[in-house]
Length: 236
Ligand SMILES: C[S@@+](CC[C@H](N)C(=O)[O-])C[C@H]1O[C@@H](n2cnc3c(N)ncnc32)[C@H](O)[C@@H]1O
Image (cartoon, rainbow, N blue to C red; front, side):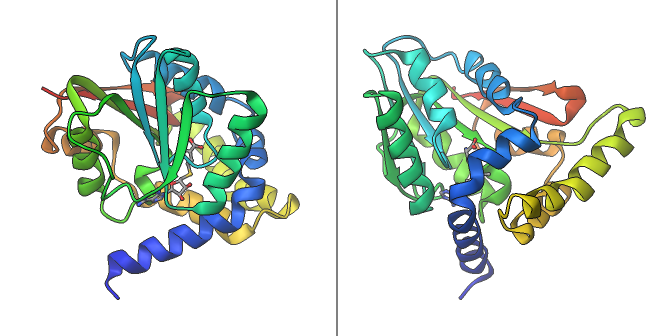
């Protein structure tokens, strides 16, 4: 088994194990701000009513639902994730919320099961950090977007304001695993979260990686003083 296969198996089982508590912990740990971050990212997607959007590493579907609101009933959204328990929750939520323009499918970000140029935009939220082969996932997202379409990444980053950094570190490294433990969501999984953010590339390196995958006009927006970052690139 390669390192890549090992990481994929680990990540898949980690997210599958926390799936039932994922939404609750997202809301608690982000103080419910995660919804506004997704809305902001979708507002930069360039996708219009009637459009066709893809959400990669869709988890329990919240990014896909935000895209679905934007494309409306004449449009369509597909969410892809390799964790079946996450996808099952996304499907239940779609039925409960009455979204009939969203479909969810099990699949790997590194081998997307779609034709070239199929979507008006492709988004990924808090996903690339977890993907075993990030350049491959980015080039797959670029491949399936039509020329002129955008690839959007929403990800946790590093607070820029030096004064706020100690508070952010306390929240992220100390409180996050303990909060997860309090909610019985699996402390180990939420120890992985800050570790994975620490190990992830900088916003500048990610922008370079997006350019390397063939995107142009790559730029990013910092939210919450840089704790969260939205990267955008366009397929030429
Ligand atoms: C932190 S969750 C993010 C879920 C969702 N995008 C959101 O905004 O809440 C990361 C998701 O990425 C998925 N994932 C990680 N690597 C993947 C891969 N190679 N292919 C498909 N899904 C992957 C995990 O199963 C998990 O559901």
